[in-house]
Amino acid sequence: MTIVTRFAPSPTGYLHIGGARTALFNWLYARHHGGKFLLRIEDTDRARSTQPAVEAILDGLSWLGVQWDGDPIFQFPRAERHAEVARKMLAEGKAYHCYASPKELEEMREAQKRAGVPMRYDGRWRDRKPEEAPAGVAPVVRLKAPQNGQTVIQDAVQGEVKVENAQLDDMILLRADGTPTYMLAVVVDDHDMGVTHVIRGAEHLNNAFRQLQIINAMDWPRPVYAHIPLIHGDDGAKLSKRHGALGVDAYRDMGFLPAALRNYLLRLGWGHGDDEIISTAQAIEWFDLPGVGRSASRFDMAKLTNLNAHYLRETPDAELLPLVLPRIEKALGRAVDAAGLARIERGMNGVKPRSRTVIELADNLAFYARDGAPPIADDKARAQITPDSKALLARLATAFDGINDWSEKTLEEAVRRFAETENVKLGQVAQPLRVALSGSTASPGIFEVVAVLGPAETKARLLAAGG
Image 1 (tube, helix red, strand yellow):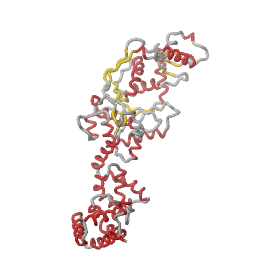
Image 2 (cartoon, one colour):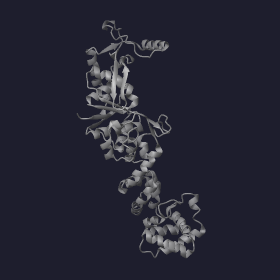
Image 3 (cartoon, helix red, strand yellow):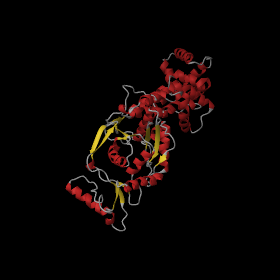
Image 4 (cartoon, rainbow, N blue to C red):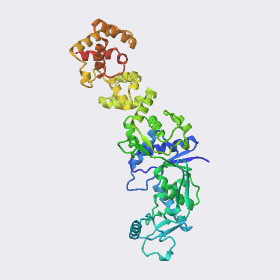
């Protein structure tokens, strides 16, 4: 049997972090078993579904590296197929027309509420004869659900879960205008797409009991259900925007790498021993449903940021360059010239360990792209540029003139000799030098900075600072 999973978002907003994890788990499970991962856009809510939301979902999944097989399937154009299934159940006596008016249903619910019993449709049209139908009333089509016994699901994550069939009412399959309901559309689409495993959030577990009634009525094979736990904030409360419940696009804008976000989402609710850093290849090799826990996971932005720092250090410089360059150019207000680009490339490896996100990396590299003295970052840095230090920097620029081997080791030796000659401590030279070259009191090693900038740019910045 070929394993087929699916991710089925509604295009009513961005691809949120919980949906991204669901998509990731479906993708990994399919890849682990050599199966297919399908994407279905559930766009039946025409009032709220938008094309920008569809594009945000496709773009978010693509950026995250979760690639679906084949073309996305859109649910709305399949409405006639959904209705066809409902009509088949109607013809086979597994569904029926219900003519209850909205007023009648409201009175029914109010009576149940007063009696303190669960509010559910009471089946008043379940066994009535067609000739009793009121004239001029468009009926809904309801499923004739079993009223006795239990519905049992062997959930691949939650274990055995069951519900008394008496608690499930005869749900609507087709509305009075002939349009299919969500419950019907989901079941028909899963069947027609050949979905073998429905991996989705635990909030859909109650839907599974209802959807199984349709599956059983149609005598279709039931899929394996796996309802994965929710994601909470780091305080244990329901995940919200203050915890990090943002769209995937927001994490990209904050400078996170897709590999880091994949790794982090993987570890939210799934584990492989004590492994924390898990490559995509390892994830595909290791991922399986028994490793998914039943308890809610806690989203921790600090952990994600630390994990991203690891991936930033491990990512080749050539892959990071196109990510940081647009940010640097935006900060400069111009394109980076060839000389600045060469300095960024030389300085990248030294800046990466000091950065946690692509934004921090771009900010930390920006001074390499400038021509001439960079702007002073703050008062602490400004305090380093005193009249005495300006004169010292001007003399240091002259001392650099005689250096032919522009390497970190040679430069460090030269600055140490210069400090001895000037009868000052090394720090009294190094800190003003750092500010003059980088604009900040924090930078990569100062001798690395001098080596990356090169003789001409170093001298230009020293003279500018000393002027």
